[in-house]
Every structure is written in C-alpha cells, then in structure tokens.
Length: 83
Image (tube, rainbow, N blue to C red):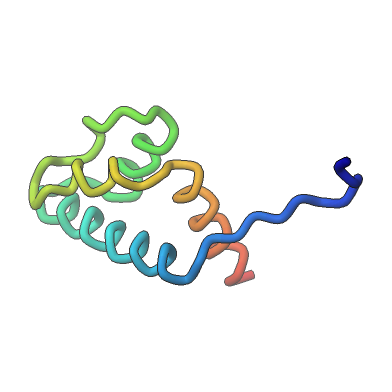
C-alpha cells in the first residue's frame, strides 16, 4: 500500500557527470556552427525534434541518447541550486 508522502527522484552522480559532458559537447558543436545553443537546446527539449541540434561533431546523436525528462530535471536542479 502506498503512503501519502512525497515521492522523491534522484539521479546518480555518474549520470549527472555524463549528462554534463554530453551537454557541453552539444553546446560546443552548436556554437561552432553559429547557432544560439540555448535556443536550440530549448527547442529540442520542448519539441523532442532532433533537427534543432546540429549533426556537427555527432551532437544530435549524443543528445538523443539522453532522457529528456532526466535532462530537464538536471537543468532545473542546477538552476535552483544557484538561487
């Protein structure tokens, strides 16, 4: 039987590190191609359309390996940790 407590969700540090590495590579590839990385990544997260991400340096393939829900959680967590 389930209690009425709050369910918690946690990503392991290894997963966070891998996600950070991947996002750094995607960011760099977008920047190199002259795109605004933030706008392109937001477009991808909202739409799940991989064409927002360039194929340059395999960035599209890399970001598609990440779970979008986990990526969004990590981004929000990182943002809130700086408040």
